[in-house]
Amino acid sequence: MSISSAMYTGLTGLSSFGEAMGVLGDNIANLSTTGFKYSQVNFEDLMAQMVSTGSGPGQEGRGTRISQITPIFSQGSLETSADDVDVAITGTGFLIVKEPAAGAVYYTRDGNFNLNKDGYLVNAHGYRVQGKQMVNGSPSGTDTDITISQNFSPPQSSTGVDMVLNLDAATTSTSTPNFYSSAISVYDTTGNSHTLDMTYTKLATQQDASVTCGTGASLAGATGKYWTISNGTTNYYVWYMVDGVGTDPAPAGLTAIPAAGVGNGIQVNSTDSAAVVAQKTAAALAEFGTTSSAAGPFRAEASTTTAGALTISCGAWTGATPPGAGTTGWAAGTTATSDNDWQVTASLDGNDVHVNDYSVSNPGNVGNPANLIFDNTGNLTSNGQYSIDLSAYNIPGDTTTNQTTLNLKNTSGGSTTQYAASSVTNYASQDGYGPGYLQRVSINNEGIITGSYSNGQITPLYQLTLARFNAPTKLHREGSNMYTETQDSGVPLTGAPSTNGLGSITSNSLEQSNTDLSEQFVHMIIYQRDFQANSRVITTSDTLLEEVLSLKR
Image (cartoon, rainbow, N blue to C red; front, top):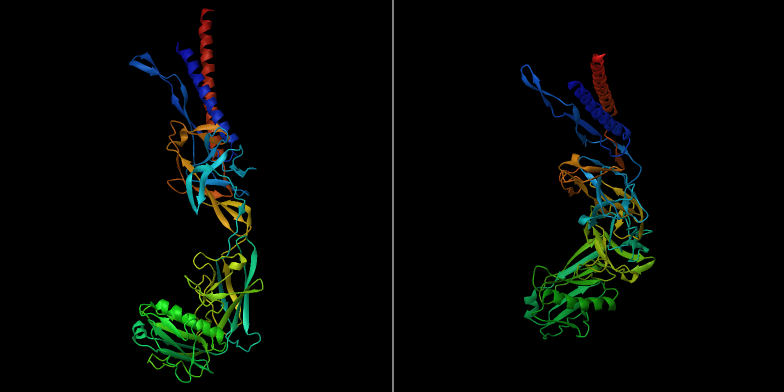
C-alpha cells in the first residue's frame, strides 16, 4: 500500500542526503590539501509508478537518488613556498608523474616536489615528474623522468675579451707613468684562471706615411721600378723584377731594401694577384725591419678595389719629408702628424705574449700590431680589435683565428675613448669560465627548470610537461592528490605550459584547496534539514501503520 511506499520513499532521501553529507565531509576534511578540488552533489528523482486518480492515471514518485558527484576544477588560491622546486598551475592542466616500478602515469595539481637521492624530481610518494630535456636551449625528444644529474658545469676556455677604457688625453710619452694597465681573468681549457694584463702606452708624436705603388699594369710595364722612403737618417728604395726581367736602378743616394734570396729586387709576375704582390713585398719589408731598427714597422697591404694596386706604409715614420715618388712617376706619398697614438701590449701571468693585428684568416704583424689612434675629439678612429696568441697557455682562442680576440670598440659596454679624465676601465668582460658546482634549481613561468652553478652559469635543463582533458570531471580519483584517465575523460592532450590552452607555472608556490568553507556549511544546513524532513516521512508513515493495526482491537 502507499503508506509502506512512503516509508521507502523517505528512506531514499535519508540515503541520498547521508551520502551528500559524506561528500561535504570530504570537502571540508581536505580544506588544507594541496591542489584539492571539491566535489558537488547533484540529485535526481527515481522512476515513478502509475496510480489511479479521479481524473485518470497519475504518477507517484519513488524518491530521490544522487545523479552525479562532480569535481569542480576551479582555480585554487596560491600560497608561497620556500622550496625552489614547488610549483603551482595557474589555469588549465595537470602535472604528469610516473610510478617508477610499473610505469603507471598519473595526473595531479599538487606541485609539492623535491629531489630524491638519485637526482629525480619526485612527489611525496616518489613518483617521478615528467618533462622534456632541454637541448641547446629548446625542449627536445619525448617526455622523460626529470633528473638533475648535471651537478657539474664543465669549464670553457676564453675566446674573446671586451674592454672599454678611457685613456687620459693629458698623458704624454714622457709622463710618469706614460701607460695604463688593465687586468682581467681568463680561463684555459681545463678551467684554470690566468691573469691577462693589457698595457696601453702613450707614444711620442707620430708621422704616419704611406704611398700607393700603381696598378698591376704599371708594375708589368717596365723594369727598374722602385719606391723610396726615408726614416729621417737614411733614404731607402725598393724595386721590382717583373716576369723575371728587371734591372736594379741603383738611384744615387738611396739604400736598397734587401729582399731575401733574390738580391735587391722583389720578383713578381704580371699575372700575380694583388695579394701575392703584397705578400712578396711584405717579406722584403719584414726583413728590412729586422736589419734596420731605425726604420720602423713597415707594412704592405693589397688593394681591395684595384687589381695589382699596393700600399706600402710606415706606421712610425719620423722623417722630415713624406716618402718620395721615385723615378717612375708613381704617386707621391702622404704623411700625417698624430699625438693620439697608444701602443698595445699584453702579458699573461707576468709573461709577455704577442698582440697581433686582427684578421679572420691570418692575424698579422705578430707582436707589433697597429697602434690605437684617436681623433682630436677623443673618439677611437683606427684599430680597436686585436688577436692575442695565448695558445702556449692552453687557451686556443676562437675557431676562426685560433687566437683570443681583444675588442676595444663596439662592445656591449661601448667603445674606448681618450678624454681629459683619469685612465679607467669602464667595462671588462670575457666569455670563459672555470668549472662549477650546482648551487640551486629554479623553475620559471614556462616550466623551464634551470640549474645555477658556482661559476655563474645558468643552464636550462628540462621543461615541465602539462596535460589537459576534454572531460576532466570524468577522471578517476586515485587518492594522494592524483588522477588517472578513463574512457570518459578522453586521452590527455600534452604540451608546454602556456601553450595549446594549458595554464602557466608559478614557481615557489603551491595551489591551495578550492573548497569554500562557507559554501560547504550552507549545503550542510540544507542537507541536514532535508535529512530531517525525510526522517519525518518515515516516522509519520509508521504512526499511520500503527493506526491501521489498531483497527482490529
